[in-house]
Length: 127
Image 1 (tube, one colour):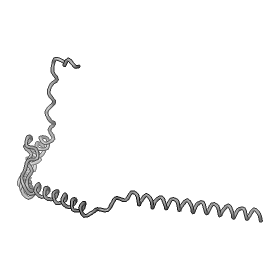
Image 2 (tube, helix red, strand yellow):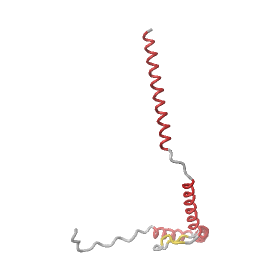
Image 3 (cartoon, one colour):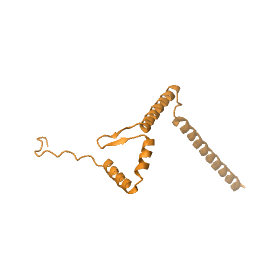
Image 4 (cartoon, one colour):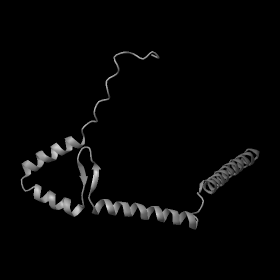
């Protein structure tokens, strides 16, 4: 009888310890969610973000619909999408020539910058 009572007491203590552990973990999760949640966006911050989005959209629209230089030194030009599609369709009437032109343009665009200037022949007095 005493052994059965001791077993019940031990099981009860384990149950209380496990339940307490779960409560502590639940409280920690709640606290972390509360402390790591960012502040809500105010109207000023929302307006600032909308203004930034409008600027990016305008820049993207301008880039997609107008001509411009991507790299003037290499001769790379940006053109409107509709014109680029028409030019591509026209150029690919002859696939072999278009392929060779495409490869030449890709190599030109990926060309490495010129090497740095040669070091002076006489060393500096500070070396």
